[in-house]
Image (cartoon, rainbow, N blue to C red; front, top):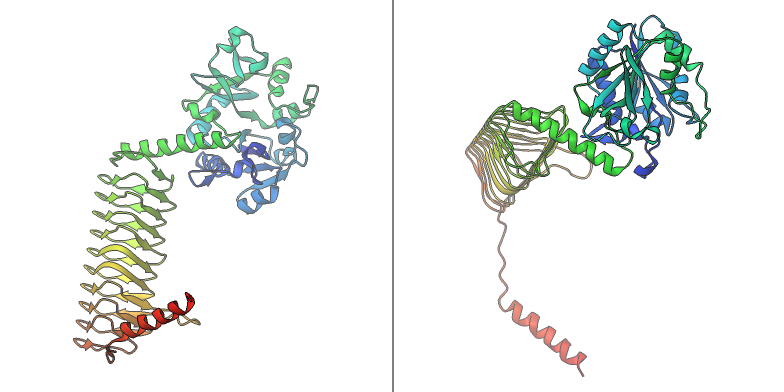
Amino acid sequence: MNQAVILAGGQGKRMKAPIPKPMFQVLGEPMLAWVLGACEQAALSRICVVTGYEAKQIEDYLGDRCRTVLQAERLGTGHAVQQSIPFLQEDTDGSTLILCGDAPFIDSETITDSLARHEAEGNAVTVITASVENPFGYGRILRSGSGIAGIVEEKDATDEQRSITEINSGCYWFRTADLITLLGKLTNDNAQNEYYLTDTIAIALREGMRAGAYCSRNPDVVLGANDRQGLLKLNTAARMAVMRQHMANGVGFSCTDGIIIERSVKIGAGTEILPGTILRGNTVIGENCVIGPNCVMEDTVVGDDVRLNTVQAYQSRIDAGVQMGPFVHIRPNSHICSGAKIGDFVEIKNTTIGEDTAIAHLAYLGDSDVGKGVNIGCGCVTVNFDGVKKSRCVIGDHAFVGCNTNLIAPVELGKHAYTAAGTTVTTDIPDYALAIDRGVLHIKDGYSLRKFAVKGKKGSKDNK
């Protein structure tokens, strides 16, 4: 069986955070998740991850997804792979792919095509390479008539070798049985006293084994991050790649400033994404929408022909033809039905807003079921929490909720019912009724004159 070993023990000191380097995120996912996903898309189900620094963080993240082994001392890439020998010995018939957990842009096409080359050529080892415009700092691939003659590092290369643009990605296919043999012959006879995986190439060639190379069509397979600037470059590259894919599918971007779209997001043709918009998780956007500027959507499904301006929505559903914004907050488990209009400074939580309902501005609706064709006035609040438990409000179809109405849950407002401005509703209101709660208006003549007169006397005393 073919299998993979992913090296994920790096610390990333220059990141200046107590997180294993492969756990730093690119477009909202750990770099390790990108590598694992590529393996799984390439039908590599048998995977071992070599951990090291803060190993528990990676183990907790992986759960039962794949095997892990610990590299207790970081003594080089060859030493890291040596820790997986018990895993390798369980199945020695196929080939093993070695990947770096902090190089997120390896892709399934590169994995499957390089394996096909590896098997067709009968190689003991096949190096996955890429051709780049600026190869500075990378190991150069030295080719021979029958495969490759070796890998030379930047510091050891001649001027002629430095002109080579084909570089080592750090990813390799090995025949598993040959890999076990080669790992047993590694030494740490070098300035760093480390065991280098690249030395297996020279050992294989010296012992008459065949070594080949597969040049990926994806030059980004070599990209990794050693510091925050490198991580930013990875995020920028991923961000633009995702947007290019959406543009190919008919999504419009007039300007890409501040736009972040995670890989899992789906967007329909004809939709335009405006600057400052962030789309995360399992968000789905329909066709012919305008999303933005400055929207945040997370795990939210949006229908066709929706217009959202400065809206944040989480784990909710927004149906076709809805218009919202600016400054609207849709909290989890909400459903905004088709044709609804929600204006500025409105917050909705765990609530259904019916078709064609209008909430113009400055309102909070939580734990409520609002019918269709309802008008919610300015300053309205569903008072859903009594300090102990939360209760729901129900507002019937075509009700009219006057400005500054408080609905004290649990309470039900009937269909076509009205509430007068400033009303506090503490009991159910029947269909077609008007609820008025104004109390008694008390007017105290001359109040401000007396108030200021008292203040004036105090001031004159203080000044004496």
